[in-house]
Amino acid sequence: MIVSYIHQLVVLASKAGIDLRDAMKSAGVADSQFYRWRQGKGSPRYETAKRIAKKIQGAKKRGAVSRI
Image (cartoon, rainbow, N blue to C red; front, top):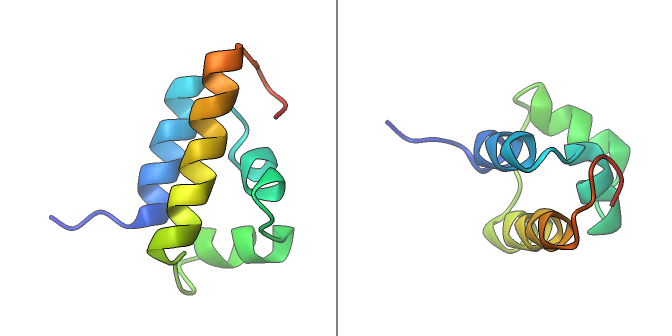
């Protein structure tokens, strides 16, 4: 089964206790893009997904609970 980048990011953010929308915003991704991806209208490119994942992991290491 192929899992989309957005699904992987949702799971990663959920496990880290991070708001995915905040992580995406701090990675330079617009709110509108977040909602498009959640609706299945496209998906992030590899580099964008990687940048968002780094923000989530960085916030997790710092102990951020809900805000990045």
